[in-house]
Image 1: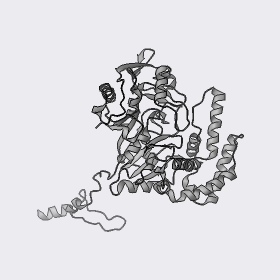
Image 2: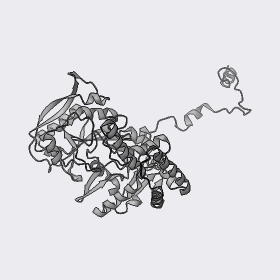
Image 3: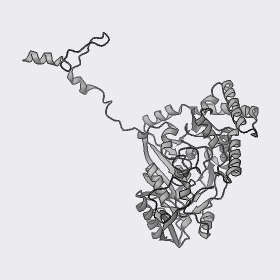
Image 4: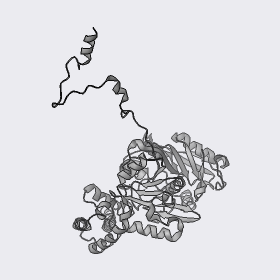
Length: 475
């Protein structure tokens, strides 16, 4: 009987094993199965990225939150957008303005990384660095701390000129504009999608090959826009000089991030630009930007696998603002709007345009949470509400008297919504000296609790001033 069992053990599905391609059959002892490496057991990522994203229409104060978290970060990344973004950071009473550089560049111990999802206007990058160097010592040595993905696309001067022409055409043809920053972001992403754009890797490789491609791209736009003013030779000379400055900063972005995520323990921070309601897919289209400002843009804009995304913090202003045109359900075209605008100094960092102001819209923020899955909220500019006896919060939308169950995709519908408000008591005293939740006025605490209960997301920080120290950690 034992011999029968032995012969059965040599059968595979009741048959003798057949050699494959003439190779002898290798018999492995049964116990070897348990000795194989555990490749089939899912591994928990060694390092995960922490993400900071805008939850409204931008200008929420992301730069301040990033600066706070960047103090002990090892790497700070930008994953999308271009110099249409504007982040203000105050350090040692010096106000720095960033558009392309990650706000974390002020941390001299951290590496700043501009990912492949960003579109880079090189004159803008170096001009931004120069201006901030004149303000204070925070940016000294920035070139040695900055890495740029070789896959990032380049914004050229003619992209910016085209941006302006397109806005003029919209005004003439439709009588309305998108409110673009005219930084060339849309046309650059259009070139990327049309697959005739040029990347950083092209610029720092064979410049003669780059020159041929550049002239072809410039001619492409000249054909579409005959009145376009392009000095091809002058821009090429400028780009040749930038190529030499840029070369030491350029790296294989995918390998850079892979090494950071899978190497020794590191704190990796991702700084989102723009905001959820400006996202090309999920925003108030067509009054949006040209990139994905939601959490998916982190994966595509850096080459980060989804399993490596850790905490996602949504930045929410204690009221709502918007730059440019487009629907704005809680906008206050009255004394309240004027007060929020003046107390909050609501002017765009990039364009200097006056921001439109209104009450906090929690329907909008809840929609942003649905898309991004926020781990916690950073509530900024709470102090701007200090003088108001009553504060209203948008909690529901109705159209033609019927409630809307979700945030509408159609902007014609959004312009017609009526907002249901919850009126909360103000606190009519300063919050600027508060450094804990308990030190906030009772009604300010209730305001925060109301937001948490509505969104079912905790508020981790509350901003009560301009400085890094004014971001009060609540838990």
